[in-house]
Image (cartoon, rainbow, N blue to C red; front, side, top):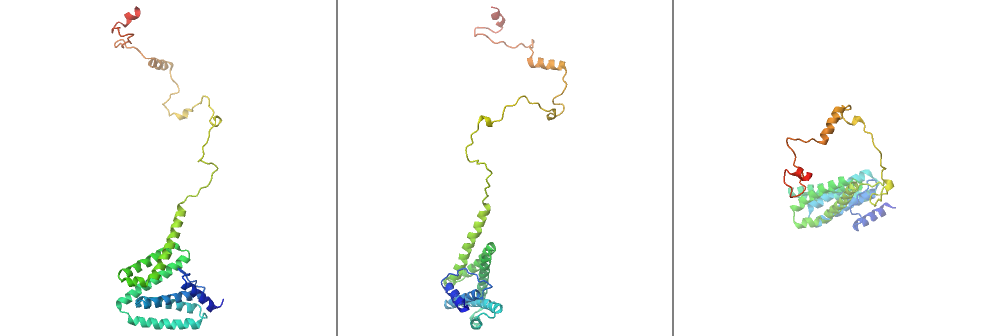
Length: 271
């Protein structure tokens, strides 16, 4: 594809908004030239909106990128790039002479925002989503500080850049949160048993009854269950288990009827 035709296609796509969030490929001089052209257009629009400090920052960004492009690809459209390079140098010098100290500070902060914006977009297209999100968040904070101190016309002048920033941040939030949700979902590996179904147990599935079991003496520590017990001791244990009657403290016998008086249990039984 001829170089001029490719440039025209890139510019047309940028005008139609099809290159929103686009990051120029360093190996393609035509794509890099479109980025330069985009910042030139931004500077012209800001200058017409009465924001010379922001226009100067956009021109400086375009000038730096065009300088690198000409150094990396000296044979790429030398007449077009040479003309634009000289035009940018002249316009930068003219605007710089019209700014006061406070406007220079605004220009420097805006230029920091532009550099962070381009860096964040490059990180996005390098699949460094978390790094890109961090960079663009910093860029948004810097721009919010500028907007807070400026009138509404300032916000309107940078609306396109701010919208581009927020679109990229929203997209990155979706990607980063999707990865986090994917990590939290545990994977299911079937083991052949479906624990969610009813299991009917047959009698044959139950363990069979076993006979008498022999316990090992090792289960009981020494002294708990003595191995040899004398017969006399066994008899004493049997007598204790049967119980004894203490004549000194006789137990009260059971009354057979309510007419029976205490102490007449034997008489009632003899009768």
